[in-house]
Image (cartoon, rainbow, N blue to C red):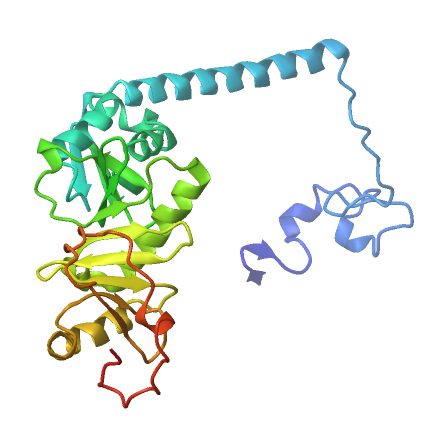
Length: 326
């Protein structure tokens, strides 16, 4: 009888004779004697293996080998990176410009001239932004890369609202900043003139320019009704309208609502005060008119208005909305 190919039970008769009587088979000896070790079992005592210490030379050799591998990897990466930088496919060949209305695309390209032909990965984005902001037309600029060869530029331009009268006429934005000289290149702009800036200190000039810019920015499209704005030393704003040339005196905002009220009553005011040349809008709910003195020549546009009528006669009680006070 066998199990899995191994004999079970006593050996056959023919094998018994070959066995020496003094060396009985293992299966007949019974359990292993104490102290015997089977080759198939773990030893009772474990032998501790002490790690073999490497000498200084062996450790130095390992360090040199690791350093050599690292150096080869760095040199390989650097060589690959240099090849990428030198690739013609990654050189800037296209500029996409958005948000430019007053500046031409050619002018933007001129500002970004050093970028064309350079590696797109090596571009100094902050330096390109600084070059764009150096233009007086540019309020803010964004520059981004678009692989493999495109640079995208987003420009926020300064919008001229008036012509500032200084030693020359300059385009001026709503913050009172000067943009460009008014000349043949910018002659298409039909804008009101801001006066009262010449011959004053720089800080005062900036404050006056800001006040005029705030008025025109508040008026919005109604700024087309304005011919010129004169900034008084007191900060009041004297506005000359187009067409009939009425002179309006403004103090503090809101400006738009007061101009809208005056324009809605313009015809009625012309009938009630045909000789009036100045209208004071500094008072809420009232409009004071100043008539031109008899036999006096009409004042030049923007001339300083005389004292408002309210200072010469008793002010009337406020009228109902929609009715002027003359």
